Picture 1: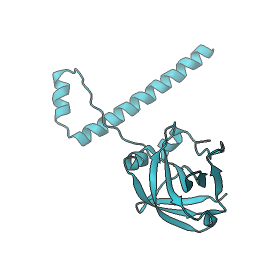
Picture 2: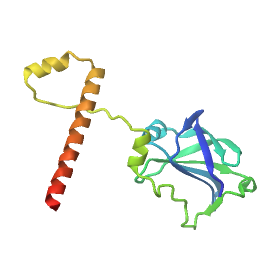
Picture 3: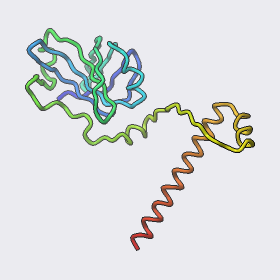
Picture 4: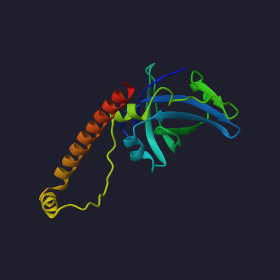
Length: 177
């Protein structure tokens, strides 16, 4: 099977966690399919698009450039399915061939976790909090810019989580003895 070395979408190099390039054949015709496991950030960037300019570099040095349609695949990990119609499948004879009656679609999620993906690229999420605080704390918070507040809360939450995890370890050690 031919391995994918890199993928560019609209000229931007995408970090791949895993991928599968294959030819899918059905009664309506054949398509070149590229399934890629990406970060949540990449998924969010492209999930609303219908079609994209894709450049696929293969391990053997070949480059496939085409306009591909996009499907976001449901499931546990963030992945994109890119595909385009093929008229001549002979050019792709060395790729995995899958037909509509097969159950052996490539599993690109195997061996990879969401935690592995987030170590490479962690998405940021906007959150709005409603708090009841003493007035002096409210006044102090209002003196800071949103960017500073983001840094403060990021650090506070990280330190608090770390402390809780350490306390849980201590409790589990005490309960074992």
